[in-house]
Length: 95
Image 1: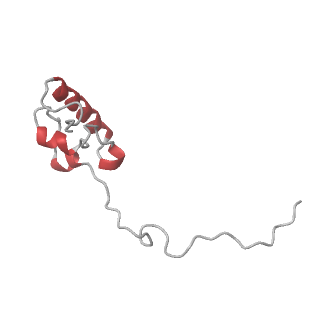
Image 2: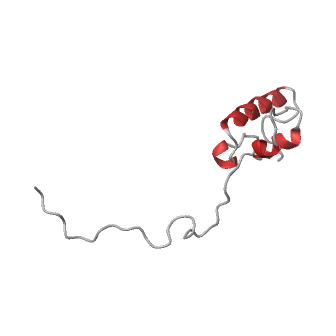
Image 3: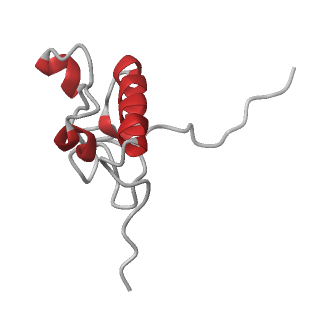
C-alpha cells in the first residue's frame, strides 16, 4: 500500500457558489411557458427579434433559457419568416 501524502487537503474556498460570486446570475426561465404560449407564430416579429442577435443569428437556449420544445418552434418560425422576407437573413451592411 502507498502511504498517504502529507500535503494539505484540497478544500473549496469559503463563500463559493452563487452567494460568493462577484456577479448576480438571474435564474433562466422559459418565457413561452410562463406566458402560456403553445405555438410560436412566424408573423409575431417582435417576439422573434428578441431571440435574434444583431447579426441575425438565433440565440441559443442555454443563454435565453427557452425549453427545447419552444426552441425548435422558434427555429422553424425564424426560418419561415426569413424565407418570406419578414426578417433579414443577416444584418444590414451599412458602410
